[in-house]
Image (cartoon, rainbow, N blue to C red):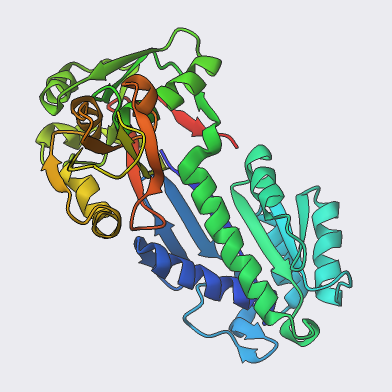
Length: 381
C-alpha cells in the first residue's frame, strides 16, 4: 500500500519552476527509484509515491519563452494561461499558495479565486513564516492526494528566490519524513496479532513496544508476539493468517531480510518506519574511568568506533549477539555496554554516557509486512 501524493504545477517561472527544481534535488538526495517520462516523474519507496506533473499551455508557453523538456508536463491544446490554471486546480484536491510577501500578483489571485469557486481546500505559506508543519497536517487531515502548488512568477518574486527554494526543500523533506516516521498516529484495519523480532531490550524490541501501545489505542484486542530468533520468524511466514502481520527490520546483522528468503516474495510492505538509533554507555559502576571491557553488537562498534577511540582508547571490545545481551552480560565493575538506554531500567545499569554514535542521523528501517491485500495500515498525522 502506498501513500500517494501528486504535485501539480504549471511550470511558470518563479514558484512553479523552483518547486520542480527542488523536487529533482529532493529525489537525488533520497537516492530512491525514479520513473521519468515527458508527462510525469514518480519518486517511489516501499510506501511512498510522489508524482510530479501538471498542465501547461499549448506549445509549452511560459514567461521566459518555452518550458524546458526536462520538466514533465501535460501539454494542453489551448494557448492560454488561465485555462492551464483551471485544469491544474480541477484535477487537484487542494491548492497550496507559496507567497513571497502578502501581495499576490494577477496569476496568483486568479488561482485563489478559482480554488474558492471550485470549493477546493486552500492553504497559504509565506516564505518568511515557519508554518510548514501545519501544511503537512493539513494535507493528511484533508485527505489530499493531488496538490496544486502555485505562486508568483519570477518577475514578481522581488528577490526572494533563495527563501522560496528553502521553503520548497523543507516542505518536501518534512512531508516525506513525517510519513515515514508516521508521527505515531496509525489507523489499523482488522489486525489481530503482529509478530516482531526481539530479543527483549533490543532496539527492535523497544520500537515494537512503542508501536504496540499506539496500536492498542485504536484496537484494544491486538496482540504482540516477540520472537527471539530469525529462525522462529521464518517458521511463522508460511502460516501467517490474513489478520496477522510482521514488524521486522529490513536488515538483521547486516543481512537483507527480504533478499535472503524466497518466502518473503509473496508479502507486501504495508508501512515503513524509520527510527533513530543512538547508543548509551551502561555499567554497574558510576563513572567511565576503569572500564576495561566493552560489550555490544558488532554493528554498534562500527557505528561508534570514533567515539570509542576518543573516550575508551584502550578498552577491549567484545562482540555479542545483540545490544540487549551486551547490557545483560556487562555486570562486572570493569565492564560496560553500548546498548539502548532503556536497558538501564531493564537490567538495572547506570547510564554513563548518552547519545553515542558517529553518525548524526543514524537510523534503522522497520517494515510492516502482510500477505493479505485487504489488510491496510493507513497513515494519519
